[in-house]
Image (tube, rainbow, N blue to C red):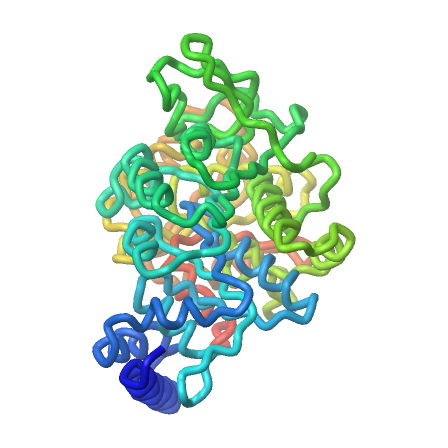
Length: 448
C-alpha cells in the first residue's frame, strides 16, 4: 500500500469511527451501514484494501436462508479456537454494511486486526463483491425464491454466481449444498476445489414434494429430476435419467453430526459451518463441542423468557422458510408443549413488498393441529385470509382452531401471551421487519 493509499485509508477509518460513535451516542441505530457508505467516498478501493488485510482469509456466506445462523456458528467455532473474527453480525449484507463491519475491526490508522472475516452476503451483490474481494472460502447454503421483486428466479442468480466465481483464484475453496440441484450443478462446472455438504438420512424425507418447490428440473438438460426423496423444498436425493446429472458425493455423513436448534434446516446450517471449519483445520471434536453449546442468533429460533413465559422466535420470510418453520412448530405442538402461534406479516423493503408468496406456503398442517393462531402485521388480513382458506380446505380438526386477528402488534402479543400456558412455548413467526419490531417490544420495554 503506497503513502497516498495509507493516508486516504486513515482518513476513511477516522470518519467511519466518528460517525459510528455519534450514531450510537445519539441512539439513532446500530451504525451498521452509514459509516461504510460515507467512508467509501474517501477511498473508492476501501473494500478491497480491507479484505486484503485479513490475515487468514475472507469467508463469504451466501444463499437465501440460513446465512445468519450459519455465520454465527462458524464465528463461534473459530473464536473458540482463539481466532479473532470480523463479522457483519447485524445482518447488513450489502457493500456498505460489509465495509462497516470490516472497519469496526481496524485500528485508528486502518490496520485490520482480524484473523478471519466472515461476511454474510446478499445474493444479488455476489458478482459485484467478487470484483473487490478474493475470498479464501465461499459457502453457498441454498437458493430459493425470495423477494422476486428484487432477485428474480434462482437459475438467473446461479448463472451470475458461476460466471464470477470462475474468474477467482484456483486457491479459493467452494463449499456447496449438494442437496440443492442448482448449486450442485454450479459446483460441477468450476475448476476450484469444491466440497459438498448435505443430508444422508432418508428417515427425514418429506411424504411428498412441497407446493413451494423451486427447482425440480435438471439444471443441465431441463428434464424433470428423479427424486428418491426430498428433505425440504427441492433439496434432496436426485438424479437425471436423461443426461446422467446426479448429486455429487458429500464430504460429511450427516448422521454422525449433532444439530443446533430445531428443524431440518438447522441441520443443514450445522453441516455447512462444520465443513468450512474442517476446511480451516479445526478438529471435529472441537466443532462438536461448540455446536452443543451454541445459542441462536436473534430471531432465528431464538428463545427468550418474558414475564416467566417461554418464547421462541422463528424468522420466516419466504415459502421454504415458513414451510420449515411450520414443520418444526407442528412437531412441537404434537407433544402438547405449544398451543399458540403468533404470525406477523409485513411487506416493507427488508421483507419484500410482494406478499403473494404466502399462497405457496403449506399452512394446512398448522391449521390441522388446532390451537390458537394469532395474526398481526402490516398485512394482517392477507395472512388471516390464507389461514382461513386452510381452514376451509382442511378436513381435520377445524373446530379446534381459533383464528384471532389483531391489527395492533402490541395487542396481538398480549393476546398470544395470555393464551400461552405456563408450561407451554409461544411460537412467534414473523417476517424480517416484524421480527425486529417483536424483539423490540419483548426485550426493549415492558409491554405486559
